[in-house]
Amino acid sequence: MGALMSFHPAPDPAHGTPDLYRVSIAECVGSLAIYGETVTRYAELGDDAGLAYGLRCMAANLRCALNLLGDLEHMTERQQQRGPNHEEA
Image (cartoon, rainbow, N blue to C red; front, top):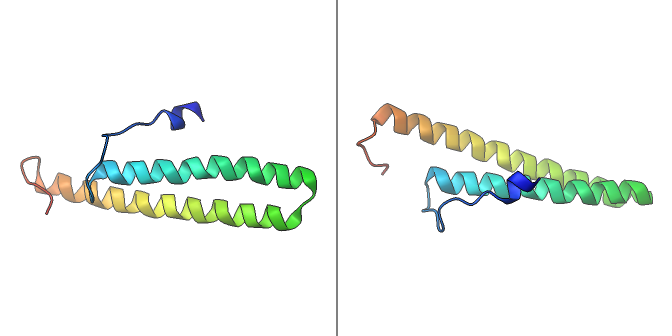
């Protein structure tokens, strides 16, 4: 988890850039780690409602990260097709 927390891209990534997607994915994955600890505690306490809620939150964050990854891959593919001298509109 230490490597994840040390991820620091450009100070303020511009909207619609690959860096912004990467920051957003890192945030989603960071939330997974936090929810994972919470779910573990709920399981240890025998709190089934908390366990279910935490797992649903983890699933939502994972779906979010995967959707962002798909967008990032699509964006970088388009940029590669256009070439290095073409600015993204």
